[in-house]
Amino acid sequence: MKKFLVAFLTVAILFALQTTVSADSSNKDDYLIMFDGPAEKGILKAFDIDEEDIHFESEILPVYHLELTEKQAKLVENHPQIKYVEEDAEAEAHYQTTPYGIDLVQASDVHPYGYYGQGIRVAVLDTGIDSSHEDLHVYGGHSVFSTWPESDPYYDGNGHGTHVAGTVAALNNSYGVIGVAPEAHLFAVKVLDSNGGGSYSGIAEGIEWSIVNDMDIINMSLGGSTDSSILEAYSDYAYNQGILVIAAAGNSGNAWGSGDNVGYPAKYDSVMAVAAVDQNENRASFSSTGPAVEISAPGVDVLSTYPNNNYTSLNGTSMASPHVAGVAALVWHYKPYYSNVQLRSVLNQTAKPLGNSDHYGNGLVQAYDAMVH
Image 1 (cartoon, rainbow, N blue to C red):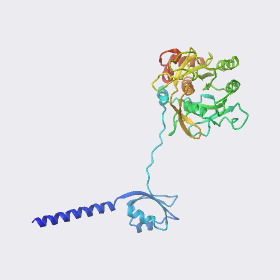
Image 2: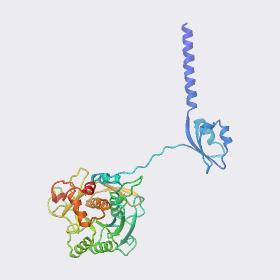
Image 3: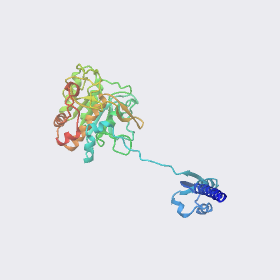
Image 4: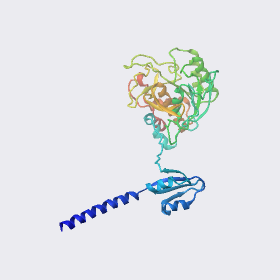
């Protein structure tokens, strides 16, 4: 009896092993094959490929999507009339990233209602905008420089202007990032060179171009420490012509937040001076301070577009200013009858208070609250 039991167990174990081997050899995976010439279905049948194993037969290329065992795949691959045998690979969607600043300024609360800043014309006075970037649509531009390549407003050898532009209006698509107002019309007004340098005369020329070409908003993520009555006159003229003028407050602040160090043109009364906060709504240590600070926006570790279809994170009040420009575009799209003075007023009235006005101005700009005000 014991011998019979041992024999039975041995046979059972061998049977189990044989079953396992047989099962493994019959496992099938998805493959794409391509014939070297016209497809011949008869060749597939020669390898015992059943009709139910054929998932797709291309009408334009000699390609089949099949289920094959590993053994069948090797045999098919060695056939002289088969050009390619590839195991089917997985793919996934490339999702768009929403930078934290888009949520912080309530742009994400506005977009579901269909307000994206459609048609609002935003002049980005900066280092130019890489108009070939897949996530940007640039509608026009001007350069104050005469020497190539700086004379091309769509050449951004620095990256600063392209980054600023993305925060304003990176497109709402399936990749990259989304801007505050993705359907605003961007205009590249190049007043800074590839080293990030420029002059007040260049800024003045850029402002004049913006006035003559009917811009709605001017964003200046730039500035200097020297006052200029002529630059102030240009800023005032643009504002009096109905343009909302926005500028970075500057990066001359200190960790303890003391002193009056807002730069120009942000310091002029006709310009909204924008300070920078981080994702926790705390003042950035570099953000300039003083009575001219009017409003705040995200300016620390801001992810946005960069030349050559790249993306990067940068810090600065330069990154904060375009958040305000984008919010202004959203609100103006919703309330097109507003004057620039009314728009400026509502942005300030509905900003989220954060504390010391010399640090934050009226507070963090809020798109949804401004629209329903």
